[in-house]
Amino acid sequence: MDSTDVIYNGLKNAGINFIVSVPCANLKKLLNLIDDDDDIKHVPVTREEEGFGICAGAYMGGMKPAILMQNSGLGNSVNVLASLNKLYNFPILMIISHRGTFGEGVYGQIPMSKATTKVLDSLDIIYHKVDNPNDAEEIVEKAWNLSKISEEPIALLFDINYWKRSVNDEKI
Amino acid sequence: MMKRYDAIKRIVESTDDEFIISNIGFPSRELFGIKDRKNTFYMSGSMGMATPIGLGLSLALEQNQDDRKVIVIDGDGSLLMNFGELVTVYAQNPSNLIIALIDNEAYGSTGSQETYASRINLSNIAKSIGFNEVYYIDAKNSVDDIDMQDYVNKKGPVFLHIKVNPGNSDAPIIDLTPSKIKNRFMKQIHE
Ligand SMILES: Cc1ncc(C[n+]2csc(CCOP(=O)(O)OP(=O)(O)O)c2C)c(N)n1
Ligand SMILES: [Mg+2]
Image 1 (tube, rainbow over the protein chains, first blue to last red):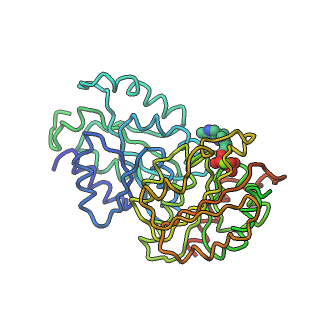
Image 2 (cartoon, rainbow over the protein chains, first blue to last red):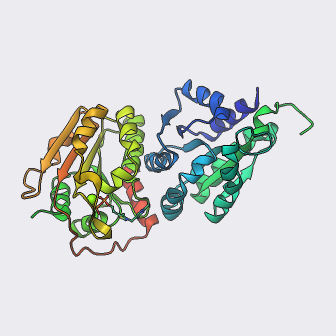
Image 3 (cartoon, rainbow over the protein chains, first blue to last red):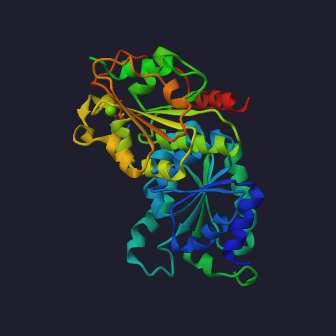
């Protein structure tokens, strides 16, 4: 079990069965796990914005949707989140790899990294920073449940160090 | 001189119980004015998202072995805004999705400013992406050839390209809340 397995388990416990994605290096293993899972429909998309639209349609058709994305994709999705998800009350679980945080090596990630929580705040979207892989499984499930009953998007942010931590590391 | 209104009227008149996802602005208002149906989702606000919403619904219906069909009424300006979605539709290959693209070579709702659809051929692009079912109707002078029943039983995805003249009609404001639109639409799906 590593920090990716617990997210996957959380998605399974929540009953998520429809996932759209644009890759991030930190999501590599999670993307493989859902590709190998016949009970999850995985739709790679060309742009995160489009993914939110697809998930809204899938939700109306009875699916439980999530998006796997990098925080930069939030910038690509501001209007759809406001004008589709918030306007019509569409739930979706957002699993976000938060790049540009401590440990980042790519300077291009930093400006959008700093904007990320402010963009979520200005959209009035609930978010939670998940630091400890020991909590991730439960948080993922709870986040979907909250999204479902509130009919709103909910974002989970997994920073760079999250992926390097191991599950039974007591020192977090 | 046929416009978007005339094409939408023919589309909805030849539609049976198919689900319709309708494009932002005047297209949705005109559709609402012609015939309000509970299984129409009137999209507002998220320009470019009509086809993705339709794709998501199509895939969900397929997953649930529900053989009903989805018709997206999209616009040239909106499709150009998120052009990658056409590639995603092709790659996902939903057999139950019909994209009825109303191409007036204009951003109609905002005053009919010309779009680049006037310089390119959207049918050819759909074909070169790989779509097998691509149909073109020149409806600039007559909309008589538009009959959705010709397309709903094709093995989709179908790309139906309808050329019309620009211009809006005197369409009403949609007096339904977004939640109402969504909830009654979902009821049609799940009851
Ligand atoms: C992101 C965004 N940009 C611009 C607009 C303004 N706008 C609303 S409808 C529209 C034109 C849409 O054109 P098209 O899809 O071709 O539909 P038509 O009205 O021509 O049938 C525009 C530019 C918007 N609503 N959202
Ligand atoms: Mg147009």
